[in-house]
Length: 289
Image (cartoon, rainbow, N blue to C red; front, side, top):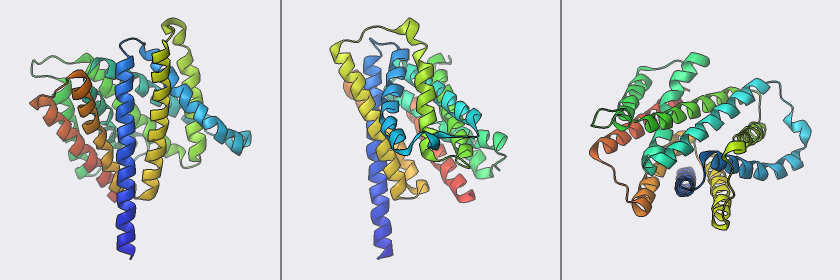
């Protein structure tokens, strides 16, 4: 039956996305654990280096001619915005509660309509405007605690969410002419090369345990990407994309288990508003499309 087959694919897609978010939340926990001894610059480099290593066999199979592009400037923008977002996110992980850092990264959907409207001239419906406003109210509750003082680290995490949105809008523009493999490769190449530079002043020799954790970081990141790709291939993105917020639950559980982290009412309310706003923004944009 078509309906039964559709439901089966939807369930498969949802489970794969949830599994991917478990990998990403686990990666966040590993980063937070390593950040007490290793600088952010090293963590970002090894995250990108392992990702590039995974891509090299694919490049060998497709050949160098498959990398020819007429829009190198867009690939550069996508790579630099994504890399900058990574620096912001990794730094936020080292300083904030794990779940707070994750939820700030997931503010990207409320920035995407604004960037897409300014750059790609996409129309913003009243429903999307309401979702964006609700999302920023949620952000305000997290970055501005009851004491009334702005949390500078949280603002860096929020900047990471905005940069993720810019990267995703750039990817949308790239997909008009560029295949996914080429987009991913140039990101990995540029991010790895650029992230080598800060190692000149940030390098320190990892211990055997830290090398093992860095390798685990690469495995978790790659596994998450593969699971996410298969999840979106199994069911419509508008139906399974909302499950990406499962990473907040996993991150909160890791934070409580390993670091005794707890959310207060302000943070819970802010996180709920961001999740609802993100889901509404994604669904409204899919309906408009």
